[in-house]
Every structure is written in structure tokens, then in C-alpha cells.
Length: 483
Image (tube, rainbow, N blue to C red; front, side, top):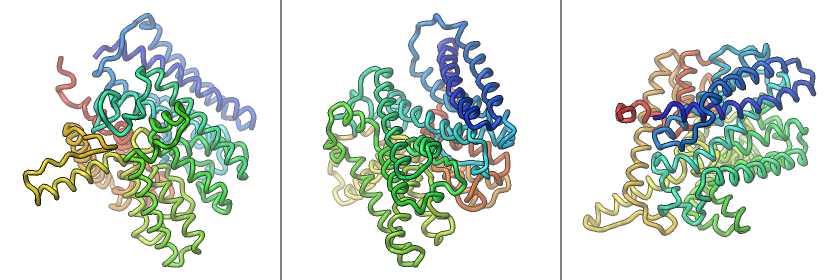
């Protein structure tokens, strides 16, 4: 590991990140909400720190090695999340503690969407805008890391996405250089955001709400400018449908979007095994929950379909928007939705969770073992997109799943030990580890009532979930630090 190379990378990152604190200053001055001084102070601190790290090593010209990549990827969210909390710490509104400020910032950047803030409708516009912007920048960071960096590190079976090995996006091979890949993905991400914002504005949102919700929708983050989340617009079906469309679009592998953007075709979407698996899962779960809502007379048939599919897509994409208080629905439904969120959407998207491709590989692997009980000597390969998946990849997926489940149990026990009740502890850990946002129990409406010690472990859960767990845990192994 080379400290100078890593310092140069983070110096550049902090210097660039400081520029993201300028738009909230403009918003504050436009609305005269008196929070601009907090953002100016945060901008100065972040910029000076970034320059202090970058200037001594700015002439260094060395590429990052794999070991450096693990450190940079792991510290990316923690460092930016810590500096991103400065406006919340400095600003008198919403008057957050350091713990709550860091929680809110990291929740935004990891696109988890769990919030400790109440009274969103009365907050200064600049603070509201900044929360949404955090998720938007976090979303593009998620995509670039997921498609350009994690496959190179071979994290949890995601070497499927390396261009040189067969895998779900072999036919959608990205440009070979990370910088070119990142630029292409950013263009697609910005286009989706603009289209989403225009759609919201056309359907009846104010310009401010349209921009803010476009940021969090395309990032599948779930932050809103209203306490009622998307329920504030539940009377407007056009807005709800637009939200569904863009949440789902952002939950698809951006490698497929890249191929569509480059080749002007959409035929390849249905040829992708993970995409088909995810669509069938959404349709099945949406119909099941919609029928359940209708049979129990919670909504009319039309509203059952709307709210059923909205919540299924919102939670399964890990966006976490709420059209209704689904925690008050019959007990089967909230837990079924959380299970969908734990699985998550497609790899290489802005969504969290285990990822559909891993779920599909686990299911195929399980079916293979059942067939082997009947045909003990049979050679039964696992295929995705008609390509045989190497055993090394399948083993990595099972390893990831095992560590994921173990992490969930350990963190749940720790949060229970801090004094939280069972339902709150289990659902908040599941939600943060899968970057979903909403939880049950005392955190059903917000996380403000969760004790401070528990919040730090939930911050750890958010980071582990966003880093695909192994990226963070590998730093704790003696082998990593051994020369």
C-alpha cells in the first residue's frame, strides 16, 4: 500500500467534493434561508483539507494497485460522508448532533435514505436541496465503483462483470479504461436525471421538488423534501407512475443502459438473464401484494395496484420511498417488502441489497444440488446468458451470502444489546445493510429515536452494504497488511 498515491486520490476527491457545496449556497441565497454561512464554512474546510492532501504529492504519477484500490474504495464513503456532514453540524437548522449529522450524510451518500430528521416540510430549502444532492452524487459513485472498480477487485462474485470473462454483461462490454467508462456512465446518469425531473415538473411538482426528487429517484436513495415522502403526492397518479418508471430504470444494470446508449437498441435487455429474473420477481411480488391489499379491503382495486406495485418497486430497488405508511399494513406485508429489499435489484445499478444476479446464482446452485441427489454423477453446469459460470464465481457468491447473513446476525445482536427492541434492531440492521432506508418498530417513521451507540453500528452497516461487505472486511485481515 502506497500512502502517497492514496493521499493524492483523496486530495483530488475532497477538492472536487468541495465544489458540490457551492450549489446549496446559491439555493440558500435565492431563498434567503440564512444557511449559506454553514455551507461556505463547510466548503472552505473541505477545500483546504483536499489541497493540503493533494499539493505535496500532486506531481506523483503512479497507478493504483489492487491493494490500494481496496483502501480507496473502503475509505471513499467514510471520508466523503464525514466531510459531507459539516453543513448539518454547522447549520443551526436542523440542529443535529455530530452522530446524527454523520448518520444523515452517510445515509445520503450510500443512497440508504434512512433519516434522523423530522419536520422536513419546515426545513430551510438549502438543507433540503443538499440532502437530495448528497444522494445524487452518491448514486453515480455507486455505479462507477460497481461497474468499473469492484469487478477488478473480484468482490463477491462480481468478477462476472470483468470484460475478459463470460458473464451477464459480456455482450455489453464497457470501454476498457475506467475514466472512459466513468464518463459514459455519468452521461447516462445525468440524462436519466434530467428526464425524471422534467417528468415530475410536467406532472405537477414545483421546480424545487422536481429537481430534488429526480436526484433521489435516479439514485434510488429515497430522501424526500416532505415528511410524507411520495405520499405527499399520492393523489397525483402521474407523479407516482413517473417515480415507478425511473426507480425501475435506475435499478437496471447500467452496463445494459450503456449498450443501449451506444448501439441505439433495447433488444438486449430481455436477453439478459438477471433482467428477466428481476422483472419476473417484481411482477409476481407486485401482483401478490396488490391482491392482498384488495382482499383485505385496505384499498380499492385500482389503488391496491398502484400502492402495491409502488411499494414493491420502491423497496426492491432499495429506493425506500413511501406512498403510504406500509409499516401499518398487515404484518405479512412489511416483512415481505423488506425481504425484497434485502435481495435488491440488478448489479451495476444504484440499488443496494444482495443483488438479483447473486440471488439467481444461489437459486441455480441450489437446484443443481437437488438434481445431483437424483443423478449423482451428472455434470450440471450453471449458466447465465447461455455462458457457463466458473465454479470460482459461484463459490464467491456463496461466500458473500454467508458473510452477509453472519454480518446481519452479529449487528442485530449488537444493536439489541444497546437497548433497542427486537423488531427495531433487526429491521434497522437489515435496512441499513441492504441500503433500503425504511424500517419497522421505533424506526418506522424515522431513525431519530434510535440511541446514539446503535446509530454508529447502523452507520457501519450502511458502509458494509454499500461496499459489498468484503471490500471493508478485507482491510481487517492480517494477510492484507502483510508485505
